[in-house]
Image (cartoon, rainbow, N blue to C red):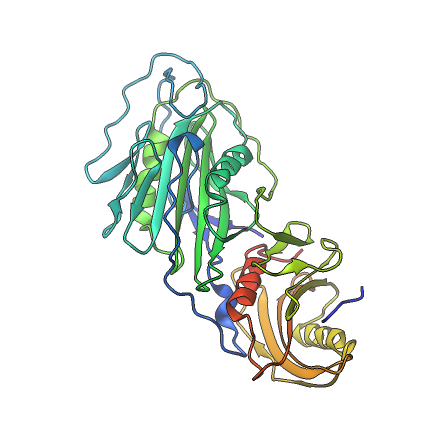
Length: 414
């Protein structure tokens, strides 16, 4: 056992277009041992009832063109379990084009090629190609509604539908151009099946308009979410969301600081909003949340530490090896493997090692670190186990999922 002594989706705005920079599967760019491959997921597709107001992520929040303001309008009541605001009479809502899913309130999503609508009456719109799933819904809420509330409502609707779910921090991903003001908040998530080792990745986009119109769009699947919804389809949906006539007076939208949703799953805090999710059987060992977190199932330990003042990857490597040397003797290390910097400049490095624990047991481990040269800070993940018939990781799928959930927590490392 190693005991040490001492995130977010970000978008790049190009002109009036909004694109999501994904964090999908970047964890696997460095390999020093055999990594598990996700099998086809066997989870039941979840389609929350429309009343729960929320939906899962999509590949892009995507480009939008400025839409001229429309005459202030309507009053309406939407059966979302929430009383809608009252305004002037509703102007006619543009018809949903043929081939698009009607998300409500004049918002439509062109159905991607290969997808068919699978949702039942009274549920959010769900589309599937038998591999990936898209969920979307629009509703009228109170002007100025907190996007954190909308996001949490959606999470509550499916949080107990998967064996393990890990959510990254939720953050503002940008704004759509035009009036009323519309902001977009994104949450990346991962699901894990402890029986098969299957992993699905996805995201939740929550659009909130100043007049109370809300849109939720989500996509997930075993092959990641990138490219599931073509950019042109997202553009068309965004445009229909903007062009829906105002439903009443608009309230200026304040930017909400990044936050984490509440969940029934075991989220282990490391530092600030950075955390990882423990898989079944792994439980916290010692205090967490002050720059260190450790979980164990009695056979394998997974520990994450924040390290500051690291000049370069060689220094990070030496710092990690110094931690290992506290409790192991006769340690031998593999060659350091480094990946290319990710879009935020963070470098992923990894190496493996063998040694003898102070208690006499031969042990094996792998170290993965994420180093930000701009700040000289790093997160270092130690996976350690006592050897069995061979030196392989006894829980490769579980430990790799925990590592991916950590990576899902941050972009740069301030």
